[in-house]
Image 1 (tube, rainbow, N blue to C red):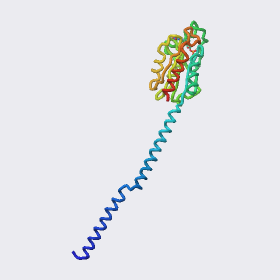
Image 2: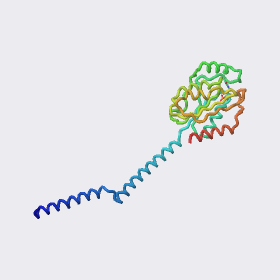
Image 3: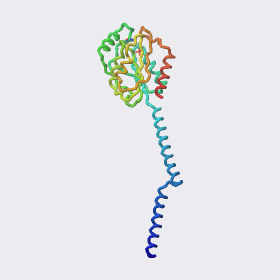
Image 4: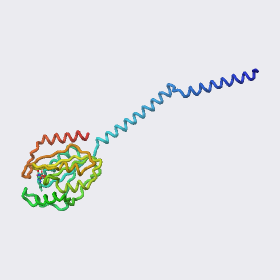
Length: 229
Ligand SMILES: Cc1cc2nc3c(=O)[nH]c(=O)nc-3n(C[C@H](O)[C@H](O)[C@H](O)COP(=O)(O)O)c2cc1C
């Protein structure tokens, strides 16, 4: 090997070594690049935490509506109002387009009309609600018992809504013969989730004396609140 050729080989080796070292050096994480990566990671985690926090705030701020039908003595309305206050909810009442004849105790025309309607599965026309039910996440529905089932205007209302993805709080009032109102509500609202339900008993003469203890109602409302948390 002459001197010129030896110089060339030496230069080639030196350049090769520098290139290899250069690549290795830039590819390996330096303390500086490590801390930058850690900072980036930290900011992603912080962002994720923030999103989670925002989502849980949204979860807590569910829109709640209490809807009831009440006819004889306002028994169902009385319970509905308690629930509305406790849940800080909006409130709406169902009203049939054609009013029922006035209530005059068990032996009145409406008792017989109610029986005919319930047994036929009749759904009377109802007035539009003052709210849009679709805007709410949680809807409490309360009805008096009529001939062991829900009152017909409530039947119309339940059939007029899409319950998919909603949470329903079923409740009803009765005079000692509760029948299967709650089960019927759950069947019609298929696709919904159900919060704890409640049957509240009033006197057997169809009057306004409440026989269920207020403490039981309070405990139910507490259980609904817990369910919704
Ligand atoms: C037409 C009609 C049918 C009724 N049928 C029943 C019944 O089957 N079982 C029962 O326990 N109470 C029955 N009741 C009594 C009511 O369910 C009870 O008094 C209820 O609390 C009334 O609620 P409101 O004042 O909100 O209308 C009936 C009342 C009416 C008007």
